[in-house]
Length: 167
Image 1 (cartoon, one colour):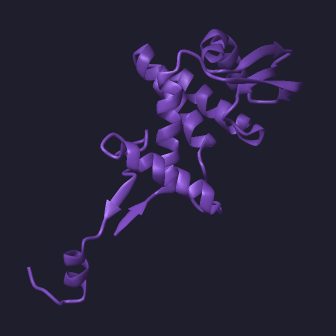
Image 2 (image 1 turned 120 degrees about the horizontal axis):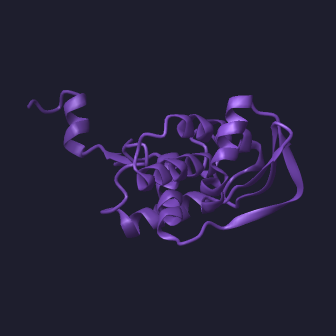
């Protein structure tokens, strides 16, 4: 029996897609969104505006607030403020190499864009995830944060639990 963490699998699939492409698909907002973040978050985001553009965010300073014009298309608009706050925290402690730093951005984007663990999924959505996993199971072992995507219970392991076999 194989158990699959649908969030971890979907997160890894999104991360790999984002990391392997030369560009991130963006969505231009019909109405720019004004974000009222902390002063330190706003400052660090504006200072790193060019880095954010590489991962699909088009922002401008708007009198101490952030005016958001574009977002990565895989992100729900409701996740933007939390995601940008997390990114601002990472930017303040920027101690990693640029490639690792970009991966951290992509981890956060993939996590927010992935199917939610406790949420309901359609059979079609789950079937699609499973099919994709089966095609790439030798490659898809862990989510970007290092959690396993699958684990197995063999018949022997189950029998041991019921004390049918010893050892």
